[in-house]
Figure 1 (cartoon, one colour):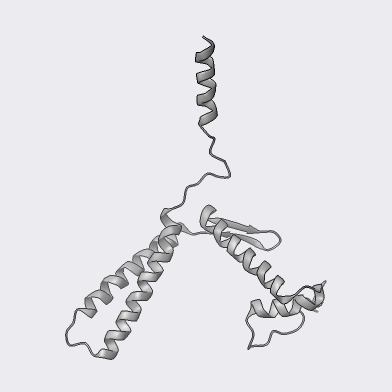
Figure 2 (cartoon, helix red, strand yellow):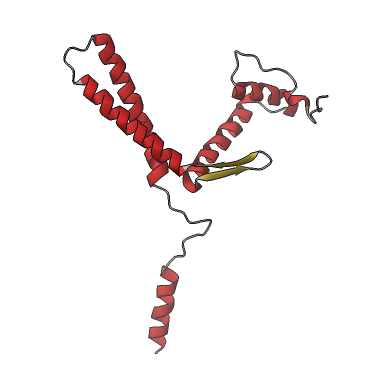
Length: 152
């Protein structure tokens, strides 16, 4: 026995020709009486903010859906894989006897590996863990110290 959904939003099958995002937009617009452009803007904003939050805090919780974590160990292994690919494809491209078709293939693979490294580096190395704590400004304390000195 299948459970009934509270909303019939997801009961229709998605056509293969549509992306999930486009399908959701087309299903929501008439039901909510909002333009597709507005719904698309909201969805894009939510995904952008989710990516920012995941980059900044290495975790993201979507209420009622789940919690996602950036796996540091997996990222380190993936980075090593990409770096070895860059070394391998660079070495293969040095071969003078390489056919033009193979050369183009290796150049494309090399560029893909470099792009992956470029995208992964900021997530691995630019993270500062504040655990939800804001950095306290030092200026007010200095002002208090100078006020105390002025009074003496």
